[in-house]
Amino acid sequence: MIIIMLGAPGTGKGTAAKVLTKGLNIPAVSSGDIFRKAIADGTELGKEVEGYISNGKLVPDELTIKVIEARLKEPDLANGVILDGFPRTTEQAERLDKFLSQEGKKIDLVVNLETPVEELIERVVNRRKCPNCKADFNMKLNPPKTGEICDFCGTPLERRADDNEETMRARLDTYEKQTAPIVDFYQKQGNLLTAEVSKRCGRMAPELAESIIEDFRKKGLV
Ligand code: AMP
Image (cartoon, rainbow, N blue to C red; front, side):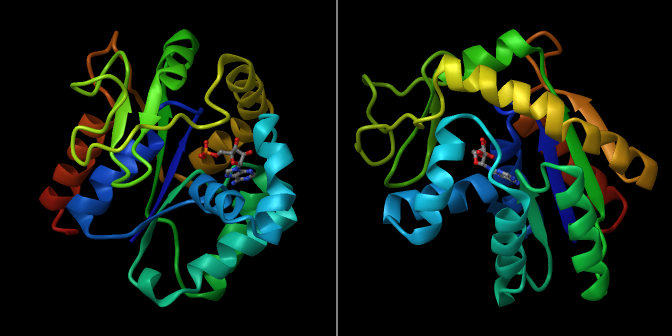
């Protein structure tokens, strides 16, 4: 099964992907995580992508597609994948379709998360991650019990370098200009599920992911 997570930064794509991974037993691949790891490891790829990421810009299509296609060919993804953060441009979406059809595969579902902009900014500037056990926290919505320390392993939490308000506004602008058009692309393909996840509607990304799993179960797909 192949699921794509779409949505502006901060909507909860990664959190929903984690829930789907557990419920459907399919690995999740985050293009952002791949790039961040390359930066942390000081690789050539990391050096190439760092400037784009810290300015809230997209990594160029050719490079992104090359990295993701290589990842998609790895054996652990033979039975499916949840793609979080890829594709992000029409070019990437078209190239993904082409790649999948060559592999005899197709996208089963595209989940498009929508959240009011001010809520996104508040969420992103408050988000923290444990670098050790990868647990996610939010200093407002889901704070750790003590200071900025992981509840599960006691490691000091980290904030992503691009999770500040200035870069976030640039990322939102990039999203509107370059990524939002692919919602239409998938709408036309007929496999798009658009859902609001926000405080005001009382449903966040994890609950939406649970309802998707439930729906798959009812249809006998998992
Ligand atoms: P994310 O973790 O998905 O928010 O991604 C963090 C940053 O990595 C983005 O702001 C982009 O600079 C870069 N990035 C991640 N995925 C892509 C992609 N599919 N295409 C281009 N750039 C990407």
